[in-house]
Image (spheres, rainbow, N blue to C red):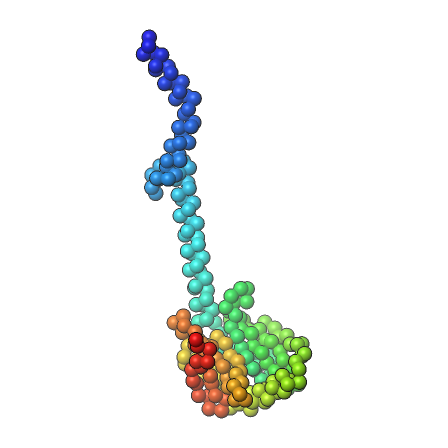
Length: 219
């Protein structure tokens, strides 16, 4: 009789506490479950965690690949400048490759026309001109305007224009930026190149096309 009572008590306890035991077992699996073993909540938590990590890693890899593709594919700086000048004749004074956002892979080329009006010409990574917009910011002071005139005159009279300077600098990597640098009245083309993930700065002489590395921004 006593044995029957004990069995009945254990059975009742199992029925009443079965749900608690099941959740307790699930908690143990959450903390100790190994991939490919266990069932229920523990296994699901493990899978979700792994999936999140994989997604983050994939996204980082994609970003790195996008940066590399933008800098090494499509249209070169010289080709973008030539396309911009065919669309908007004048003097190209700068060019920059966009490397992020919706405009990644496009070139922005600044062209000054004969009337000194400046236009920003957008060139796609396939060489197609997407459009040109006039720069209406003409609020510079007289000294700044005078400096710009002198710099523009130097660029107009250069034996090596922006396109030719970009071709010369391309021997050192993929040109991603072209501009003019006025160092105490001595104007030269300023170039930025990328090679093997390293960025370098260069100067290209307006009269000879000689390329020298620019260390002025080094620490």
